[in-house]
Image (cartoon, rainbow, N blue to C red; front, side):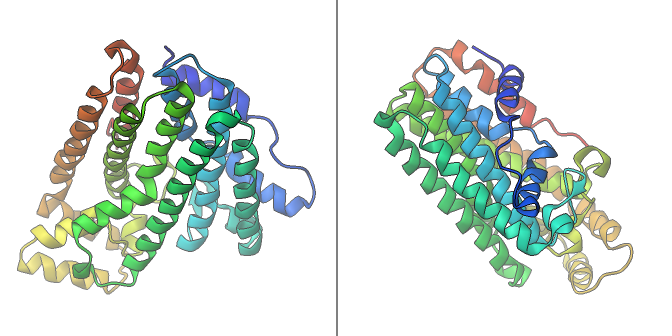
Length: 323
């Protein structure tokens, strides 16, 4: 069995080749830019780990991993455009450097490349892999639309369970599908595939809860994001929704005033209210709840416990909180 770190190196070497031609230069420079600024490559490595959980690693796991990584970066290009985000991984976003039109087209061509790689796999499970991928891809789009819809709603209209469902679709299902697609290549049974999928889904929710926390409280130098970016645009994160639920009348009024305005110290004032409402402490417990649910599903997978160790270590790596 290989560790996440070992497989990350292997996949990085595989993925480092040029995926696009040179012309039209602006189109392919835009597509290459998002790939050049790195990332943890979590999703493609999960597909390889899903394969190795059941059998020796097959070359098809690298084809699937490449497809998944291209799809993930396609969503980032378009998400950044929709969010008007200036930075991604502490670098200028694609639309900031190349313009909105080039960003849209770059995302489109990346998505087409996804299917080129999926079509490289062995015929006997190609349809299963494409079906699993298509389901996840559609759900990611659904989750993004829900996220955008939430922005147009009053905070009290968005319930916490709705938010969890949104992040499950927008973030978690691709992690889950990556593992499932690897399991398909490795010959895992439908029963084992489902438990592995649920493991990935719940780890993904816990990871997103942590990501929302770090957007508010994390060190921007470490995470390459503007601190409080979600706060500045009044994004309805789990922190905001829970704060509105937990805060007293005075705090609630103050928070609503801050949502309706943009003082220079808006982020600082909102963070102070979050602390006062104790949503930061609540977040840790909520993250642990989803993490425990994920491990219960992993326990139910019918393979030797030793084969699960890399996934347990990876979950610990992903959910190690830093500021």
